[in-house]
Length: 121
Image (cartoon, rainbow, N blue to C red):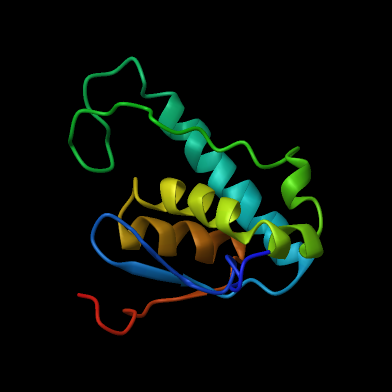
């Protein structure tokens, strides 16, 4: 069992940090759905030369698949599998800008904050 909560920490976007503040199953479902929709949108660009979010060549290295993942089915399991969940979220958030995530999270009611973790820039 991890000694941290993957849904209560900061994650790096392409140009900054987004701190998730997920505390309920409903909030988790909104985060999960938002990340899944973003991954699907990114996947649609896999045959295109450039990714619209950053103008760089896009290579889909990651596809979010948490909806049916039994490791994340309950709050207790998400806490128990926090290291794996943290990896999933890290991979998802690193592909878009801070503003893109803030816009998506605000539109879908995903609790978050904008702050920089201590000792980082």
